[in-house]
View 1 (cartoon, rainbow, N blue to C red):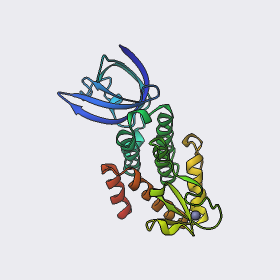
View 2 (cartoon, rainbow, N blue to C red):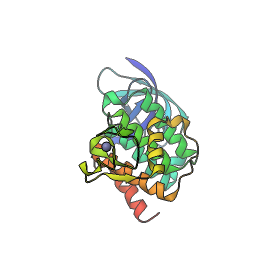
View 3 (cartoon, rainbow, N blue to C red):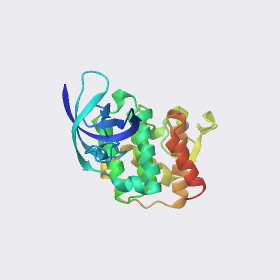
View 4 (spheres, protein in one colour):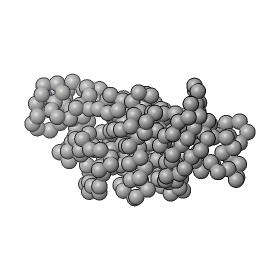
Length: 248
Ligand SMILES: [Zn+2]
């Protein structure tokens, strides 16, 4: 059967002599593996279609299992994301999250739009930290781990300082915080932004100015959520950590 999809390359691996297998996140068919024959040949028409982060239209033939590319057109090559080290690192992390942290049924049209918006935001020079945190929140929500930031998840209290409790799936008020020794105290600014992340669609991301202190808290908060719910050893995450440590 012949398929025509719009997709983004989230993984690209060598396969046999000169071929590649790409994993696409598509707008209509979730994640799909497609063989691109001759992709590594210098004159291949389809080489660029098999590069990581490429957004394109893919035509492929498939009976079962892997598809075979028959034609394709690039919509956005995103070469800047492959050329600039920090952008490559963040984009690789976003792609690996979709590839490994999302089940097939969670990788629908909404996540496709979110990844597309995420890569576009990187390419347009938007704040990489805010962009990736917002994307992480969308991944958590798609995987069914979206936290509840409306009120204390233990007693329903809406007032006073709150702490993030990843394992309880939301926030705890000061009276209940003892229930989770790992709970992370949140300032007003951080809680406000976490609520914004939860409600916001990446396609609507503009420029947000955030204080350094709030940035630090957000970083810890998102890390706690990701480590609790997406406990996977991701290569791209380890690289981001190294980059952070040495402030490359
Ligand atoms: Zn409480």
